[in-house]
Image (cartoon, rainbow, N blue to C red; front, side, top):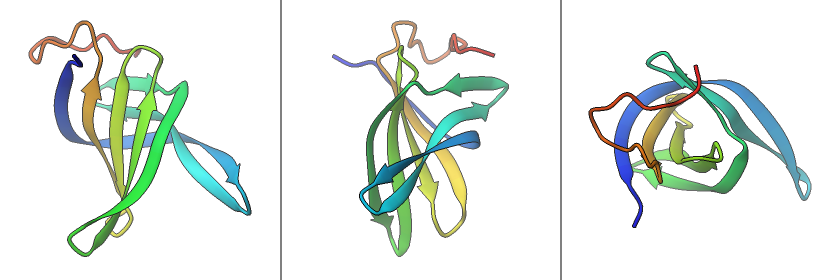
Length: 101
């Protein structure tokens, strides 16, 4: 069973990468920072657009090789949110996450 920590905090995406998807060039987050932590993604999972009310939100499932991260980009507000982190062996809600600084 997965350990999932709900985060729901604004994050800064400080690095991106681009991938061709047919005739379209798609953008993906490469690195995020929040609360003095930095996460470098090494794997891309699913990317899917969805709606929250009238707003378009793009959901990204990413991994740093140790944990899985779900982040959302709000296309109207132009903000990024870290929704959750899963599969962390040290996933105690009150411990500091062992993420690279």
